[in-house]
Image 1 (cartoon, rainbow, N blue to C red):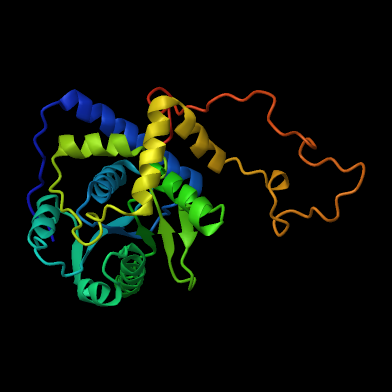
Image 2: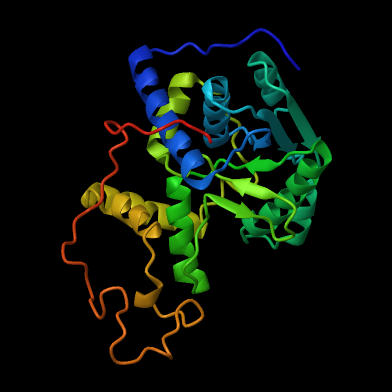
Length: 300
């Protein structure tokens, strides 16, 4: 579906240009580091109506224009039939920017409300149902990649949640195959910070649609973890950046998972990544420098 291109009015062109450049660099680097998008791909960009998916779609459309490879983008929205959901907002916006799109209508809202006890969080069931529908849709339209709008902060929060409540050192990877092996999920915003995305969204004036099903639940564990990480970021500058860097520098021999490292067969004389060292020689915060470093936007 094509129509006249839409350019949101902003009150600070320079700030918008700077944020656009910073976020585009982060997305370009993530795509390059994890080979997220390849020549000939058809990328299904999942658009919820929130700031993250709007920003992801905007940046991917921009990168597509100057990428050295060809790939197609299809924006897909899942209308879960929540009461009061403004069905016209997303189609009008997607038509205005001239992107091919599809709205999938599935009444998951009624199922979630029926199955989840009052007072319990709806996110788990809602997420599983939503993911299944998106997988089915990707197969129907021939998409080779499914792009989700999770960013760096989402990945850190998920890691902490799994540590605290599931006993697993696990997060959201930037790229992963689905459990049935039929799909590849990518997270182009993996290197992008939520606060930058929020500012970008405000300046672009995206037509935000709040999630009234789960977003209003105050007792979510994720909200507590988010608050903790935000507090750390304010009180200890560089800590969050260091945590994310740690996710990219895993040393199995210095953890305790015997399925990942052969502890049993270590013998005298073996050199195991420097041996028994509790801390690195110099412990300093690892701070991202996307504002100044040159990050390739190459997608090959």
